[in-house]
Length: 334
Ligand SMILES: CC(=O)N[C@H]1[C@@H](OP(=O)(O)OP(=O)(O)OC[C@H]2O[C@@H](n3ccc(=O)[nH]c3=O)[C@H](O)[C@@H]2O)O[C@H](CO)[C@@H](O)[C@@H]1O
Image (cartoon, rainbow, N blue to C red; front, side, top):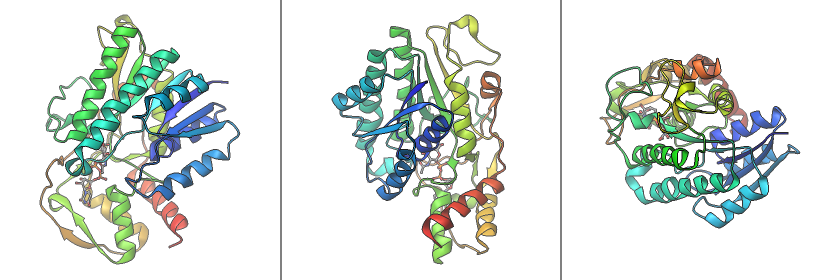
């Protein structure tokens, strides 16, 4: 039986990945700080589902607690570690930047230390499409320079990529980093736009639409995303001679960065309309200017993911929105 240690199993993506691996027969050890950045009940609900599986166990502790983390990893004896816990949120990073330093820099370092000590086969860690920052060349490809992060959130994730590379080089530890693109779906994050919009529309409250709706996102359905992660678990980076076409594989370490995105640039207003159609209710629109730290558009080149795994996300946003809204109505009984 293969064993995975996943940080952030109380979180949106960690929960879905843990479910997928458990269904596949893996043993999963979860680790989550259960922070109150958003509704803890949602995180508890996700863990309650995972806890129904015989082969799931979890530790509640912060990433910054190096002792607790290394003990949990040691006890789990994982083959792979997937590090998804983080202080998330582009906009909150303007309010509370220190939380990102603690969780994303110190915390990620602790995960890397534990991975080295446990001598895992593969360490996989979450980065973000936000590292493309002010880039204008689209679609975003891994080989493009990404040196213009617009928020401390993006900067800490970019730093994580560099930290991962150094660890791969020094310790010969294979490291893969994912760049996620605006992930949405059932059991999602209440701080993200689709969740806020759905809630506000149902409550008859206005929704804030940034940059007057002149925004584009490569919305990625969570079920597709975790399938992409699953594929990458087995795509262990090797030496430079193993590079595929258009690879981001480092010439100096078993390390690569991979976009996981739908590769479909969707207008924010079309996404909002899909939510309205699904709810059968119109939003009260409050158009707002561009927000500091926000980016106008994201669009993933997902060729590398496909070459490495034979898989690429493909759920049309209308279908993904329908599944989210169905879950939302059921969960909140509205
Ligand atoms: C909150 C947040 O950080 N979400 C994630 C999201 O950012 P991202 O900004 O893409 O995601 P959001 O769901 O917050 O926003 C989606 C779109 O809606 C707009 N919008 C948002 C809120 C609102 O009240 N009104 C509004 O118009 C945004 O400007 C954006 O164009 O994807 C990134 C890349 O995967 C992740 O790194 C981020 O963690």
